[in-house]
Amino acid sequence: MNIIITDTALDMSKKAAEMIVDEVNHYPTLLLALSTGATPIGCYEEIVKMYQDGKVDFSQARCLNMDEYIGLNNNHPQGYYYFMNHHLYQHLNFKQENLFGPCTTSDNHIKSAKEFDQRIEDEGGIDLILLGIGRDGHIAFNMPEDELCLDTHVQQLSKATIQDNARFFDSVDEVPAQAMTIGIQNLFRSKKVIMIANGESKSEIIKKIMEGNTIDTHVPVSLLKLHPHFTLIMDKEAAKLLDKI
Ligand code: PGA
Image 1 (cartoon, protein in one colour):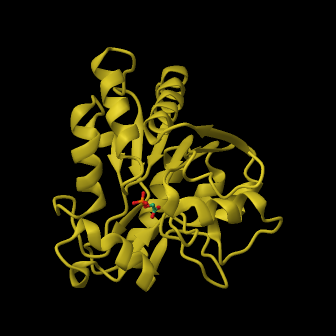
Image 2 (cartoon, protein in one colour):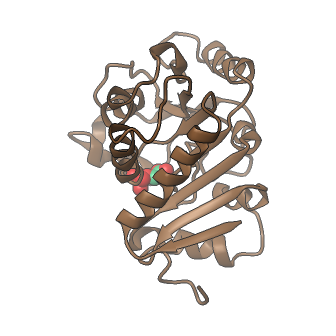
Image 3 (spheres, helix red, strand yellow):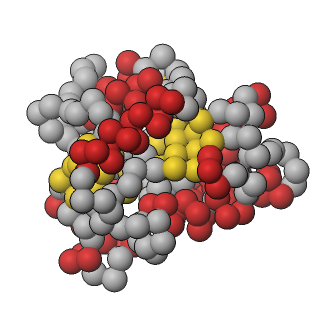
């Protein structure tokens, strides 16, 4: 595990953006998997700036969304595709056909999940994932449970996660109770994984990951400690409970 601690959240965003842009410049056709949530927004702003400054070209790159709420289509303002389009895609020169995510509006979620996994396989697998981290240690929407599902699947969201995500909706009652998420297997098969965390609210889960000497399906992020190219970038606030930094 490669650990980078930055002074500020902005520095965290800049560092992650530089690493992503570097990968795109080295491997222009790579398949990215980028996450939603509050944490990566600053990183996406930095990527857009670098693109506008002519430092990177996404015309051959491919990108997927790792999860989507059940029932929300690509145009739904609280949906994750919409989020990515709003913060990133529309500002860059990706080709539309190179952007995809799980379809959650069909009446056959099992089929849609299989199609999503098949597309990832057909595209040759993920090269670089950018993840945030839930306070309970979930990654994408792989929630703390006795067992973790390898493949893309429909996941019941925990009350805490629904509550956390209510800030993006008008009320907590509007947050869908289920999402379709990429499974653990594709997260692990990604050649590289970058995780970003900032702020005091992430400090407890960061301490758990960094100082624990076990892996635990009730803390899904702990499994990433086994990934050979896992980089965790966090600001000082997120790192504040660590004994040694
Ligand atoms: P956040 O979400 O970036 O909005 O804190 C992180 C996550 O749930 O993965």
